[in-house]
Image (cartoon, rainbow, N blue to C red; front, side, top):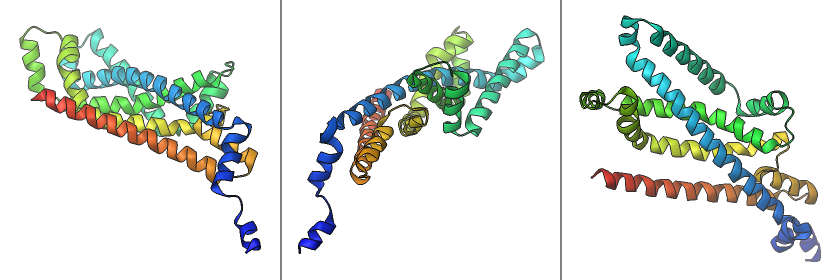
Length: 248
């Protein structure tokens, strides 16, 4: 009986104390969680700004290229140029791994920066912007053409039509996909440890390296991510239901 107890190893309570209480290692988890949330929040804002701009350029080109091509002039050339830049951006960002983009930003583009968190915010924001752009573009293109014509007949120009009529409708249509991108972004930040940032995943791995106990810290990290995703899913569900009620 004694041999079996010795072979069973420390109890869950002892493992918890070893991994989180001793040396105040629980603070690493808290600091890592705050860093993860901070990076995600700023990257989301950057991604939405980039995504809306790119989606507006791409959808404007697709909707107006035939009319503007017939008229010719500088406006059509400028629109073609920016559309080509946006397509190149989408191709490069969506065609390369996120971790490689992060490493390029940290070791090449922003190599003189000593703080990796702003670099991660920018890198993840640029990456997210490419996917948000396609989400918003699909939403804009799904709005019925009659909405454009009705708005223009009331005297609205193209930009006011996009701002007050098209984008609000497109936002409702793409909200589920946009929420899913937010969830994906939270999980993608787990690679921030590649550039020395102590995010949530890195904190769990540091504890594992100190205590040589993998189960408790890594399961704790996984449960925290799961809780965040479930909370976001619940909030997005409430927002969708509220938007549906407002349409009635």
